[in-house]
Figure 1 (cartoon, rainbow, N blue to C red):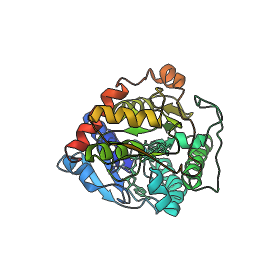
Figure 2 (cartoon, rainbow, N blue to C red; figure 1 turned 90 degrees about the vertical axis):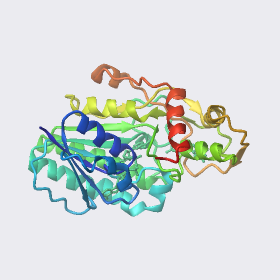
Figure 3 (cartoon, protein in one colour; figure 1 turned 30 degrees about the horizontal axis):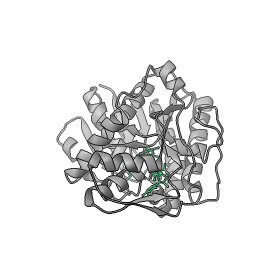
Length: 311
Ligand code: NAD
Ligand code: UDP
């Protein structure tokens, strides 16, 4: 039975990943310091003898006795509100945390997968974004703490691959939604859904013409699982290529929730990317992966989850 260590496993994406890995017959060790995650996200796994939770900050030395076959490094604050609230912790987990977990992979002879992000493309000057685009990042802006920590994480991951011959993978995750997102994480999807359900105005930032492409979490997890088992060492985009403006997404959520809330406009945050859409040609070719859940279908599931009190 392979043993997989998941850092950030008590978070939104990490908890779905732990669940999937257990289903696929792996032992799972989840390491999380709960800075933005919740033990509740993994409480349904706690009776499984193949699951273990360790509360620990991976920016500090990570000591694991067991043999490990894979390390999946997902620990990091991820929503713009979270990483601006914890800028230093974000920079540390992307740099020191990635260094520590790569060192662990080297010591254990384990394969390594880094959760990177579409944010490494910054405010992109080309669209859709292909993996060979270098990006347009303001390193000293408010989003720089996240973007640069992930850019460093990618660089050190490939340095360990090239220098120490570790089998490493990098997934560049585009906006993802689904159950276990926090109501208050400040991202567009949970904000709009919860505002619509409460009959409060939906807060669209700027004029809402900036675009995003939203992927449902089960599709993302499929892509990550395929990448983990693949021979690919270069970064791969995983996301849903259907692009829409933020105003359109607010209107779609109003219609799916049958809400009569108004839309109000607020200032656009500094350095907010104007466009974002993944080019998934590489994932299609190398992983035979593409999303299966339509935007409407996925949003309905996320809405249902928040309707049930986020449980
Ligand atoms: P999340 O905040 O729900 O999960 C992150 C988890 O990491 C949390 O449980 C948190 O407590 C933990 N963590 C943070 N710092 C840690 C540390 N130093 N030591 C141990 N644990 C630590 O966020 P998420 O949306 O699930 O994101 C997970 C990963 O996916 C992140 O690396 C993020 O950058 C990446 N990602 C997410 C998205 C998205 O749309 N959700 C998009 C791009 C990339
Ligand atoms: N946004 C918005 N209203 C909100 C929250 C976010 O208009 O209440 C916008 C935000 O400015 C950005 C987009 O929605 O243009 C997506 O923001 P999110 O925080 O979900 O993630 P990002 O893609 O910016 O990391």
